[in-house]
Length: 244
Image 1 (cartoon, rainbow, N blue to C red):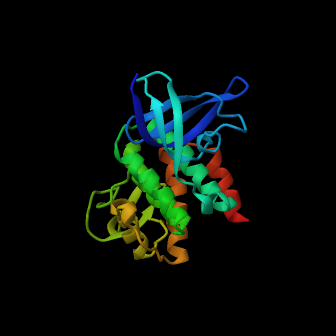
Image 2: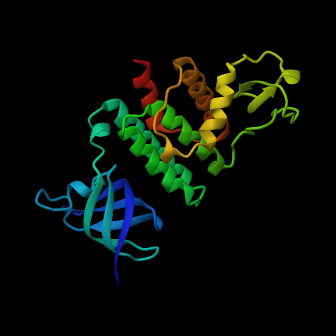
Image 3: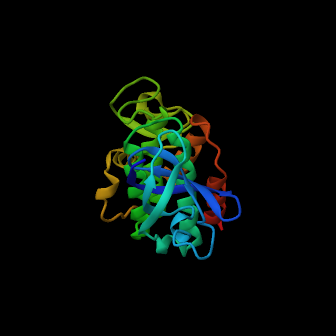
């Protein structure tokens, strides 16, 4: 076996015996891998903190393809201190982690890791967690194979005179196809397109009106329920916190 360094984020951990555990890590290099961490549960272990769930680190391992790798050491890249000291932010992190775990099961796209890590780091840097979360959600719709058309009416296919967006209809609706749909602010349509195409790592600042953010978030909540088949406990908990 050759000692290998990988970068990754710990999605979950499972106790193994009295002092050891197995961590499931979403890695930049190999996707999700399992790593045996011998003695890492011990208070004296140098790897105790760096092998906890929701940790972003570099791992020196004896890598075994399609088998459990073995941890030698782990070094935290970013402690995500700001996120982990705020119950709302940690709830966003938990949701994005659970969502990403589900998306990976349906897509092996190399884009997922970069977008996921970039989103976490932007929230840690103080950017609006709701906007960052919605951006990642839209990008993930493509990975899940259910992204709505960003350019045309979902009913007739027209690319002209897009009037609104409706989750029940499944996307944009043009003026000619309007029935009883609620007309949204034009900025909602513009921002939905921007959310999909923007490079998360390149975002330096976000200023979006509260009503625009709220409309986009509600649309995505309903759209995910209708078309993805994903029902995540962390999402329900996040909704509860945000509504208090």
